Length: 154
Image 1 (cartoon, rainbow, N blue to C red):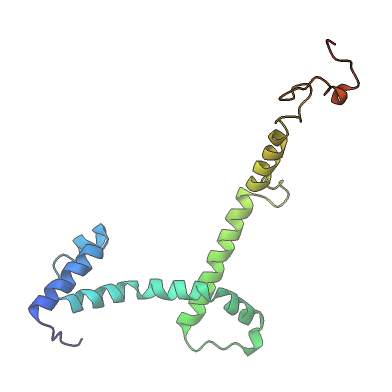
Image 2 (image 1 turned 90 degrees about the horizontal axis):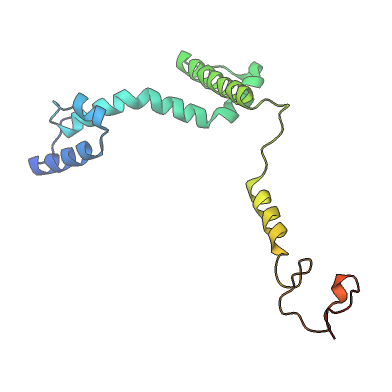
């Protein structure tokens, strides 16, 4: 590990920043560490595996295509193969869970925007001049839309 050559003031500022941004569970676990470089290296070591899994997951599509072409794949490290297989297993579990929740044969959920749009059109025609017998502002000779009835008075 390299020596930390920063001043005490800089170290204190960095420790305040790091501890402020740490999760509560991590704060208690790393409370005894006073050197920010040591804290940083411990956190880096702790989350290296998680970082590898996330980066493997983002590259899953490419890796999946490469796995299909198995003749040309040669993993150099055991960790590469394990990471690739773990990501494939996680994606398979996710697909199975999604299928259990919503099977392929089930009817799709109605589109929210389409439902709102249809309801808007349904009630849009309830204005002046569009409803049955309830026009706004009737005029004396405006009875042609009611099937040719004669006016009630003359």
